Image (cartoon, rainbow, N blue to C red):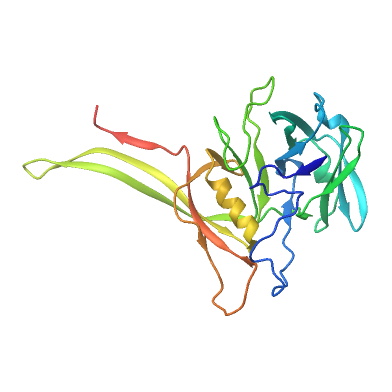
Amino acid sequence: MTLSSGARNSFVTFDSQTWVTDNACITPPFVCYPIRFSSDLSFQMNVFQPTIIPADPATEMTIKTVSNNVATTVTGVTVYGEVLSNGLYALFLEFQGSTLGNVYNDGDCFTLTIETDFDGNKLIYTSNECFTKITDPCFTTAITYYNVDEDAFGFHYFDRPIIGIPWYNKIRLPIYLKNPVINTEQEVYVRSDGTRQKLFARLFRQYQAITDIMSEKMHENLVVALNHDKIFFDNIEVTFENEYNNQFPNMMLPVSQWPADFIVYETPFDELNSNCG
């Protein structure tokens, strides 16, 4: 049996991946995903499995965190399996309501391991990414993203059984919003006598998003997340419509991490004055 990230643009992966900027010429700084609450993490992965996954996959999965070679079992994780094709299943793991956020102290780093026993063959898989417990949310943002009606970017999207709420991806990243600007779109009619009549005015709010240094993988996954149907920065729904600006350092040295900035628009923010009735 083989377990992989499945969703090829997932922030959390368990299979081998290589990136151009990961090379022997670079000693990259250690960049981990911050975790403040258990609800900061939700992701998808695929299982190539010869037998049917049970209705409750969590009963045959053990999820642990590992820090300094000490493993701690995480309980309360919601897991659901969905058939994608013959022998290929999507697993959806949601950590809201789990013990993930209560295991470590501020600044502790850890990885995730997943132990499966779907067909009696126990296997353990370790995340490529590390996480760090934080108590101060400053300069971080929890990003939730999903599509409404269709699969995209390697992700499988559908409504959750019974409650009908879409499955979603969620991760906390070193990102913060600044420079709120209220922009105006308007149209004015000029009469022959020179008087002016405003036909409509629509206001919309934009923010500049600033990232800390992140890896090539994290930047690529973030751009994918920003191009989904639904995107939430903490509790604000936003859309991304402009260029993603990588801030590469001006030096003749290879780098594997760098910051970036981009613009998002709060939605819905539709303050409208119309005289076009």
